Length: 255
Image 1: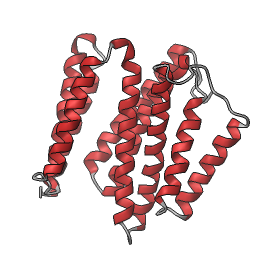
Image 2: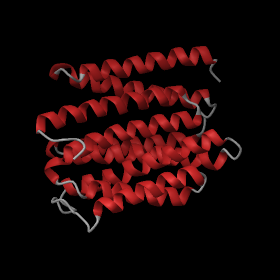
Image 3: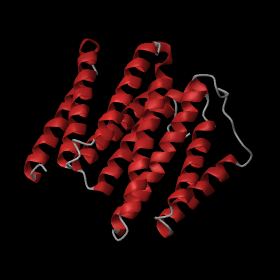
Image 4: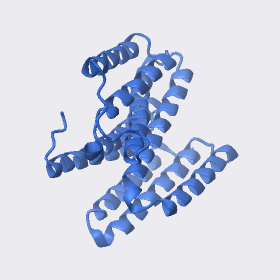
């Protein structure tokens, strides 16, 4: 186990590397290098967390990372540039799903820790909304779903009631994983299905921000400052990008 002071120093260096990588992405010539730097820092963060929790020798983790790396590399080479928005949407969704899985395990194990249970329930909400919303966004862009806005009868009321019910479940029954998961997953679908294909890039950018928020909240639930910091970076940068895209496309984020 890494001493806490050294862990914080290492975490700070990793976070700084990610920030520098994101900064480099704002320049065309340095964007590729910036993306590579951020990816390397993320990989290093995974290894550090595995070592700090004394599970670096867990073969299941390495098999999982190897499978994920193979899928990611093959997918990156096969996806065309015109298909990049839906690819980003899928990656956002997987980030949300990962946070939801962390939240589920946290709630199951934190039997007496009320703080971890409540925070885990919030992470579960944001994670599932990100996952299902991103799947809908990717499906619309890939023409697997109608690109026109799909508006149900009393759609706004359905969305509002679902959100209120989800928040009520978090407050009163935070350890009831399946109720929160079902409500959150439905809310993600209802939220994204009514957005048209032309405005979907804004929605994807917002979901990108939510994937970071989900990761940050999951980090709070498990008490990992590195995950909190990286999640915060993704969440804030995604929200800034969303605002920029709204201005560029002359759209209102609220609408």
